[in-house]
Length: 119
Ligand SMILES: [Zn+2]
Image (cartoon, rainbow, N blue to C red; front, top):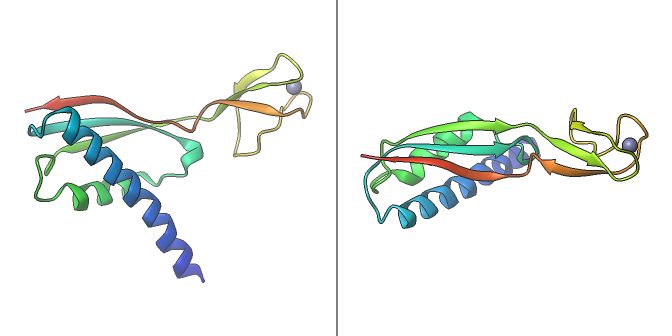
């Protein structure tokens, strides 16, 4: 079943790459693009190399072909619902390191296109 899981993981990056290509193409009116910078939350478990590869495949033949994709990973941070704790979380367990209360995730789930450089 390991192969199936890897396939699913790649599907995840593929659908993210498709969203990026779709949004950027639409916003830039299908202009030629040199560089795209994306902020990707760690909680999305994206493998940057896989996203880059999927992007190249999806962008092929379109206005985004050959564009460089810069991936900036955003750490997972949260705020405790019980005490005043706020900070970065290790791993994906949403528990407060001070009181073990439930933590509300503040960052780490985003997929944001922060910069697009048009040729
Ligand atoms: Zn707490």
